[in-house]
Length: 327
Image (cartoon, rainbow, N blue to C red; front, side, top):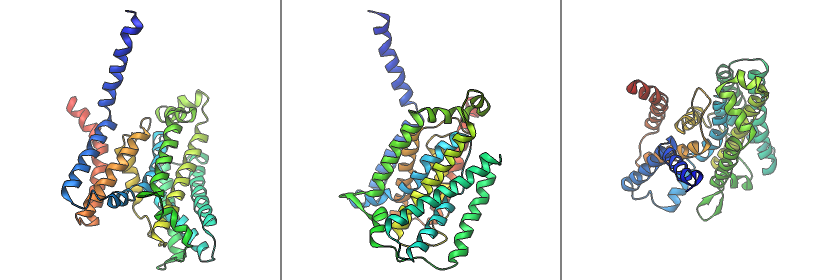
C-alpha cells in the first residue's frame, strides 16, 4: 500500500477528531440539550407555530452578529448597533407619516444603517480613535437623536405591505426573517472563510502590523467591516420595525449586549484573530431557545437579562479559568 493511501484515513480521522472537540460541536450538543429540556418543560414548545415564533427571538440579532463577528475578529467592536436600529427605525417612521411606500422605507432603513456605519468607520479608521470609545459615544448620539425626534411619542401608520418583512411567511411556518437569516449566514460564512477578504480579516486580527506590511489595506478592510455592521443593523431595523408595526425611541434597547454575547458564545475571540460563522449560527439558536423556553415558563424579563450578562462574563472567563486549571 502506498504512503498516500495509508495517510488519507489518518488525516480524515484527525479532521473528524478536531471537529468533535471543537467549540461548535459543544455548542451544538448544548443546543440539543436545551431543545429537549424545553420540550419536557412545556407542552406547548413542540408546536410548529411556537417553534416558528421562537426564531424571532434571535434572527434579527443574529443578522447583526454575523457582521459583528467579523469586526471583532479584526480587533474592533461596535457597541452602537442597537442605537443604529433606533435611529433607522425613527427615520422610517418619519417617512411613513408622509405616506411613503414600503420599498422606499426599506431603502431609508438600510441607508441610515450604512451612514451610521460609515460615521463610526471614519472616526475609527480615519482619525485613529479606539472603536470601543467611539461606539459608546455614538450609541448615546444615535439613540439621543431618536429621543429628540420622538420624545414620548410613537410612529405608526406603516403601509400594510411593509409588514411582510417582519411578519410574513415564505412557506407554512417558515418566516421571511428566518429565510433571510439563513441566506445571510451562508453569505457571511463564504465571505469570512472562503475569500481573500476573510483571510485579510483574520490576518488583521492576529497581527495588524504584519498584515499591513504584507500588503493588506488594514484601515480599508476595517472601514468596510464597520459599513457591513451598520448595514446589518439597518436590515435588523427594517425587520424589527415591520414586526412591531411601530417605532419608539427605546426600540431594541440593550441589544448590543445580546449581539456581543451571541458572537462571543459562538467562539469568536473577544480580543480578535479567531472565530467562525457556524459557531455564531449555533450560538444564535442556543440563545433563542433559552429565551423562548424561559418565556414559555413565564420567567420575568429581568431574569433573562441577568442570564445574558452572566453568560457573557462566563464565556469570556471560561478560557482563562481553563488555562489556570490546566496550569
